Image (cartoon, rainbow, N blue to C red; front, side, top):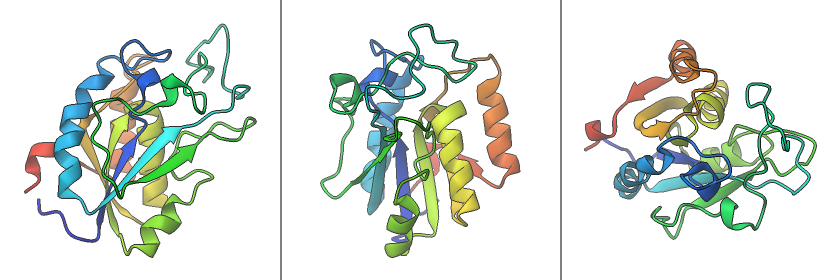
Length: 191
């Protein structure tokens, strides 16, 4: 598959708190970093989303249940856990999208309450590729919102990892994305 000048790569939430040792670890989440690092140079337009929560964010719980979308404290704005993974190669011209900044609203999608769609359209981008964490939450929400915004959307499956809680939620998320119009691809198909 040839990457065009009007293609964009959206890298979702490759942050320390979602990687091993973080407060909300995605199992083997750090293993997507080398895959994403191989993808990044192929794209002229790279967007990196990050959870950037205030300390009193509504999703935080000291007794998180996960399945009810309550989570341990994670990715607090300016904290070490909110930093991008140290091995992630961030291009100089990459655009960082902060999400989940409203203390009273959860925001899984990189499009939700951000200017991402506007950034993409201003650059003439009509086809996007999504990679990152976690497949069954923020990646899925970003892919579905991209489709709803009218972008041709690809899920780079080997550049994603999921929480898979409850078990089977990753497979269910991939099916939902496919049924909604996303095309799953693997990183080795890119020229």
